Length: 399
Image 1 (cartoon, rainbow, N blue to C red):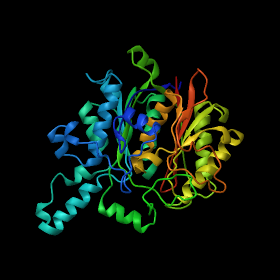
Image 2 (tube, one colour):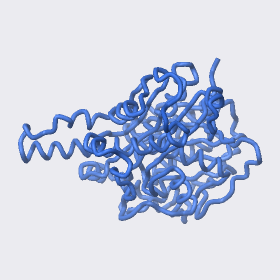
Image 3 (cartoon, one colour):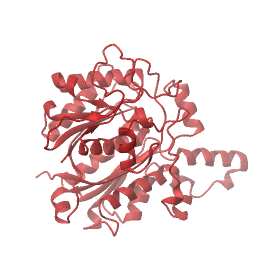
């Protein structure tokens, strides 16, 4: 029998500040964390959250994951230790690129000072699975532990896979999410040569003036638990992960399938997995990258999947406020979706002012507004679509 998966803790570090509630409150208030064309986590000082040893032995992407995981675990009431069998406690942390800061630093050292000066810790620090390994070691999570690497879908993949571990009995709880820190010369140069980054340095998803995404950094982590066990230990249930689905465009390494077929199917399958219909959806957290191709393909996908319901469902992009966090995006946006549903609010898509032909959904321009969802549980979906044609959709229900 499939088991219900509860969300009992959330944590985040983003360009809007440190903390999941900080992300939610500042985005809902219309604040932007983007400055000079980048979404930096300027309020995050690693030594305020981690030991000196942890800082020295980890890349920034792992540091961000440790801070977000620490908040989520405390939020779940697990500060004194993860309850239950540690062998049934999983850890899945996604990333798009991993420790590229370390790669660039160590390559420079080798070029300038010779290979004998390269750090013996360089390889373990830069590994894409370092975040999941370090988080699992810190909190004694001895169940399945691994990373997911699927570009901009990695954080959402991590949450979905972790939920499946719990739903089908391979784990009783999991720490899951995504993390990324790629504000490096090589990354910026590479995305610039691809003409993927906004030349204006403004993230304006779905707007006719959009000209590319704004690169950001950050991490988002959720604590997931088998619901009956969570209730038995007296945990506060923030929400339930009702559905998860993943598909592939099988079309192009960087461009989405123009009509959004794979994305549409992921939305349909996630709703089916949740036992829900388009009429049940009260809010959509868009992938919404501010790129010409993605925003159009996503709009087409939502229209096709939700049908007549699409026009009346508010859909906003977190990336308008924090930029694109690559492998962390799906996890941070899952946190943002959950808190928006709990507060019955649709946060705004910032910088939206000029409609584009065919992009005619309710993108919540300008400022947040209340969700018209009644007094019962409210369902939202969070979309994540990544380079490589990866499509992931999470269905989240808040009480």
